[in-house]
Amino acid sequence: MNSDIEAVAKIPELTNNEFALFKSALHTLLSKTFIIRGIEKEKELYDFTIRNIVLFDAWFSCMDAELKRDESLGVITFRAAGDLRLRLGRDDTCALLALRQLYEEKRIELHLTAFPVITIQEFQQKFNIMTGDELKKTGQIKVLQRLSSCKLIGINQADISDPDGQILLYPSIPLSVDREGIDELIAVLMSKSDSDDTEDDDGAAAALDAAPDTESLS
Image 1 (tube, one colour):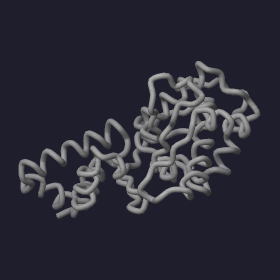
Image 2: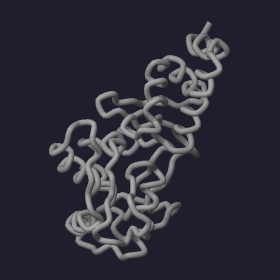
Image 3: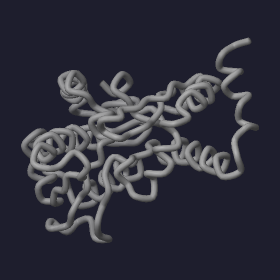
Image 4: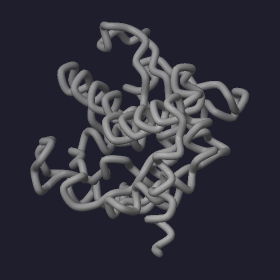
């Protein structure tokens, strides 16, 4: 018997509480992209998924996807293909690269369990330095909301146009763009520099799976 089928066949052996955690973990991954250990309400889901990693590996294998995890970062995600991929526009990709660099700069100042925090002004400055362009207010709001919905950042206030507002940098960022991927993404940005910043334009600068990963994004 296929090992994946054997693993999935163990689902009925879960207790009611375990099955509830199993469903919640799957829902979080499929709808919110990542499970992040450092987010308090997700710690139980993270621990449960790691303890039952064989079951989750098998489940995602059945949908032709691959579970991805980095236990040093405390992040679980998955890699998919085809219609589960999310197109990113040029500004989205530039913003993600800027946040990736800011994550590395800030993380060395913190304990491994803490989320780096930057201001929106710091993000604007890094974006401007990388692109030579100023991100307009409406574009900035759109980009930050988009990356927040992908669970790459957390935003601490309602007014995300406030320069003093804070952005939490989640450890999903380095799992989405690794060091080797940065040069390739920059090359893509350069080749697409004249493309419009639209969500589903063929000129989009990069693509994310439903769960971003180091291979698909980098």
